[in-house]
Length: 109
Image (cartoon, rainbow, N blue to C red; front, side, top):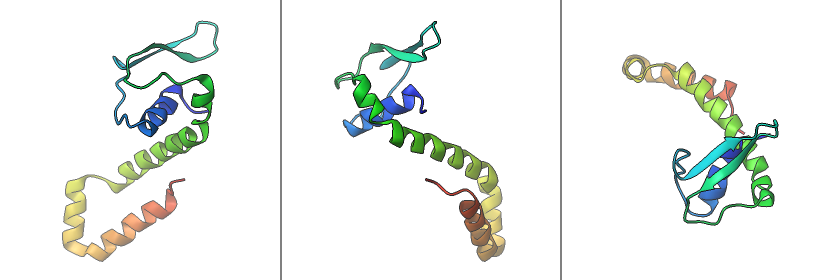
């Protein structure tokens, strides 16, 4: 199950809001009864989503969260940009093969 914040970001993007600041635009709070997070305060120019609208974002949010893990893994495997530039200078074909291998081993959804 995707995080509420991810569902809100996708809902906002679908309604032409590119950025959501969770310290002022949308304030989330965890319920003390263990039922998870809820929207405490909504300060965006678009309508606050209903539970049904947020549930409709579940699949896209799951994919986004999975892809974020892949992006992080790839970033680590790619290494420092300075070292990559040196690698490209020395042997661009070897660099291309290494990057392709990283991408192949860490596919996005």
